[in-house]
Image (cartoon, rainbow, N blue to C red; front, side, top):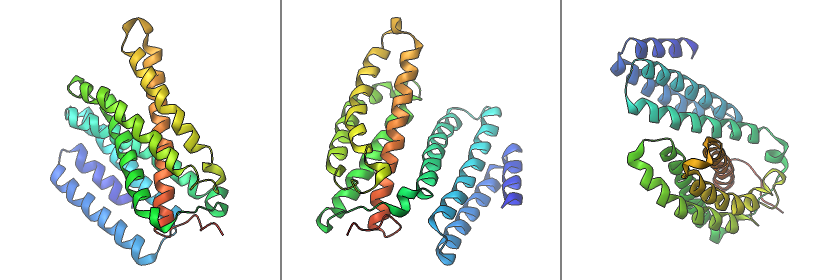
Length: 234
């Protein structure tokens, strides 16, 4: 894997993007098939995926140095946030809460829990990315923030009992009922130049925290319904 990563980064540095893309697709295909065929434990699979994410981040940094344009900047932000959530999930699946915590999801709520948690995470992720984009998406970020806040509070309210048996996640739903309100208020005040840069940074930090907590909820629900961890509460 180390040699493949070095070769991939070398091709990117030489602007041989077609060959680099082929190597990337082959490497990701190997990763997926190996995980399935050898039935890797979840922590090992996530850690290996984190290596791929780091290599891609390095490639995008090289492309930014080559003045590849706004696409590399946006992808750098996307991979950076993905990697942050990824490391959080690695820490979670290697913690005591993952092995000892128990979650209960009624059969009638499995499908809706999957859909709403995934939509909420996607919405928060999109909001976070548009916050780092240029002014063409600023309007979408402003109006989308209200809808994302409502969806986040709704999902947190729905899953508050489902995650009650997981010690490390017990306080996540209450936090996600409050933090979106703070995010909207911070966003409104951050638009006023006289409030200074620190308020905008606090707005960004709160948004990243919401993204991390949302990823924990979505990952917990999907892993439980797919039988990957978090045993049923007896």
